[in-house]
Amino acid sequence: VVCSASFQPIGRVPQHRTSTPLYSYLDSLQQEAPQASTQPSVAVNGAVSAPVQAEASTATPSFISEWYGDIGYFGLDNLRSKGPRPTADWGTPADATRKLADDGTLRTGSWWCSEGGWPSSNPKGATEIFYVVSGNGCLSDKDGMKHYFGPGDTVIIPKGHEGRWDVFSDIHKIWAVNAHERIEDPSPVIRVQVDGYHTFAPQYLTKNTGYDPLYSSSYEGISFNTFYDVGPTKTGVWTCGAGSFPVTNGKKSFFHLLEGVLFVTDGASGLSRRCEAGDTMMLPEGWCGHIDVIEPSKKLWTTAE
Image (cartoon, rainbow, N blue to C red):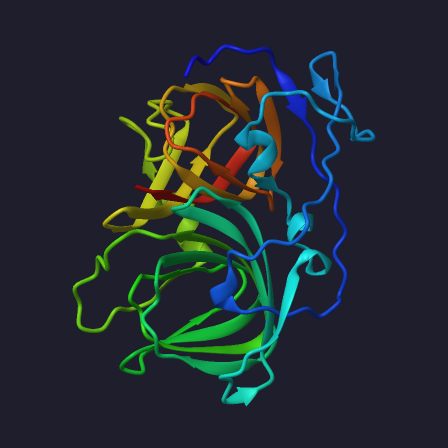
């Protein structure tokens, strides 16, 4: 892929969430709701103006426009309902979901569920990583060990996990799933992992002295921590101060921006996306382009091999 194209900024897609309760099955994460319209921005003297009415685009298709969603994209009124869970053993849990992107191996989207609990006795078919936007719950392992989580936590459910779900207050989460081939954890009991937001503090991160795990960049402004590394799935936190660096061979990855403002530019199409806290994006294997960090940024990431 040749990374040479003119800069074409794309603005944010304004969305508005409502409190409408909707429902769907966790195992139907791949179900997709109708796509929201995109409203591009206009560049004025190098800056990106307020969104304007969208027009038919003739731009080259790009992950920049197709694999991006702000938090409004995952508003409750945009999720697809599937009805209540038939295996619930307490409460009346019912859930809803919306997919953002899916390349056949890595996919990402959002999920919401009301209060209740149910057994999850079938081995999980893929490794899932999710960030808790709101709500509280617990995932139990096969032997009964409990893993509680709440807003700001990152939860990892490895492929092959068995146990149960309990939702104590309505949960809204951003998820990524790596559908890798084999169960990578040989333990007799596969355990959930929960990492709190406090573990993303600077003192727990490593300064970049070689190549960072997302972009293979040697840029010194980057710090990171890979807190899950099992088989083809890696997950961690990444931070960077204001600055800019090229990407020549990016990893297949998902990120959810937790803090800051940055631009991701696709060198093949020339399209650039402004990302703010709350935004989610998926990037293809081998992409090239540029990262421009406008305000110090922090993001949760997952790579899939």
